[in-house]
Image (cartoon, rainbow, N blue to C red; front, top):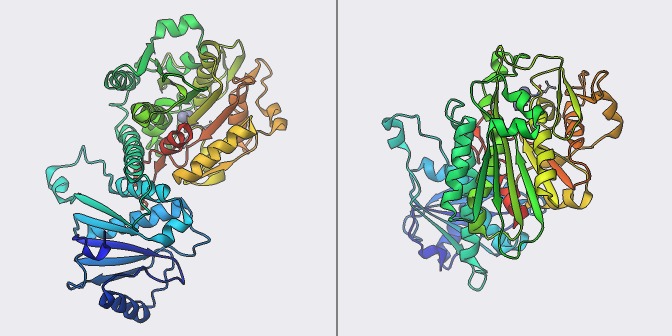
Length: 488
Ligand code: BES
Ligand code: ZN
Ligand code: ZN
């Protein structure tokens, strides 16, 4: 379709720095664009915007050109950010019908299916708001987009419908995780997560099966590290196992999500400010649930098992004492010196359970595991560790395609000394001030044996302290798209 003929409130074009702006069959429009870009010094630098009221020269009421910066430097993440930027501008002029022109220059840089999929994702992700607890007044003020067009050159359409569908599904899955993280901890209890898992199974009409292992059974199995964390809370723990097995399934992947529905730190109590966002300590679990909610529609060919050791970390007369020794499912003993390093205890047993009862080819865990990872990598980048180079590279490639930022960290063997206990096999903190994200990963590695394993510490990106183009303040759904991409 001729982009000049699309009737919308806003037509969005992109251009690279120092390169020409896409042209129209309406010559006058081209002239106007040229004139204005010279006058306003528009060169296509990142986030630069040229804005025009079209006055009938083309069918759209308004047009903006958004700069993508240098063509060599653009990646899918930065492209998504500029799509989100355009959506924000559209919302500020109350546009409900918008169109994107993805001209040949864009598709020279990315595969056409990638640019369609990622555009759709960015539109949905940047329009997300968590409004459940807001009053009607504020809800009414939000003008939602009604129609979004994507214009492509003739013959360059590729598998348009499939790309749109994948983009929609992955963004919706991400928003599902955001909702779960944004809900207060009084709502998202372990029992609530278990109910959600059962609802996902029901919706899937048999393709996702769910088993919830209750406290008594957890004790019988011997998952005492996990139970130790749960024992201070009034909320009973729920060990949630989701399974998806397509016909002629390929390899078997277990995805473990940290599911601490609230992390007070336990008796090693957190200061109040550090506790403010700790409803987000189940962000890994939210990723697992979201992946399972959308797996069947994405027709994933692997056998996938999701494991969520859900519980709450509370101080009480029954809570673990610092110094207590617990015996994990695989027989290793752990001296718990700090009850705030609880995630690794729950994951340890989830790994042993996976290996004994699921026999996976791969294990991935997603966890808001350490503040130290945020110190190392900041709020936008997740740390990745692993014991298998090939597997790590596949995850890195998936993150590149999903536009999520991860950085490879070392499983530094020499630091293993730091988590040896003088009275038990392991202790749950290193005691020193440095390398806390690495010692946490090393602790986990004690429970995966030789199974190829990747650990994602999402403490930073799981929860946005300040709004960005793609994520409002709150849960980000980080990891969902990466894992769906990986499984695809
Ligand atoms: N859930 C926290 C990690 C965290 C911190 C996530 C900030 C998101 C934002 C984890 O259970 C924790 O408390 N870790 C401790 C470990 C320490 C006691 C060794 C930490 O990072 O301070
Ligand atoms: Zn903690
Ligand atoms: Zn925690």
